[in-house]
Length: 111
Ligand SMILES: [Zn+2]
Image (cartoon, rainbow, N blue to C red; front, side, top):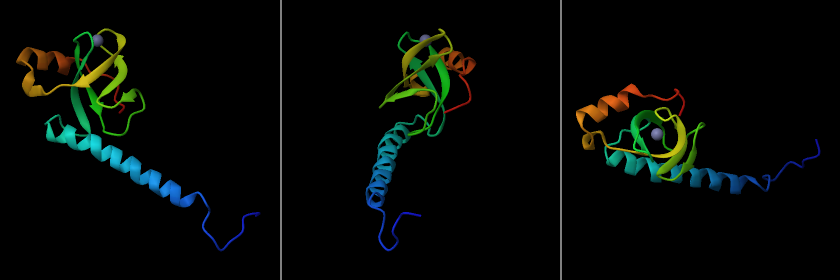
């Protein structure tokens, strides 16, 4: 209907390359997360700008409830409650008490 057959649609190659770039971006983010021992694609302890600790789901490259800013992301802190920039923290850098605090506070079950 209207489109001529026989040749690739002009946008196709570009879209494939964009997909590849997106995949590379996910890898670039996932690998350091994984290598630093934060866990990958699951529950990660994060700290907000006010020092609150809570557990969230951090899936590299995928998020619907937060605004991604590279290593940081903007999301709702359930401890505040308030909006804040949060960043992952290594469980090994926390005291037992801090780990318990983080485990007590979980945000909604969405990436
Ligand atoms: Zn907070």
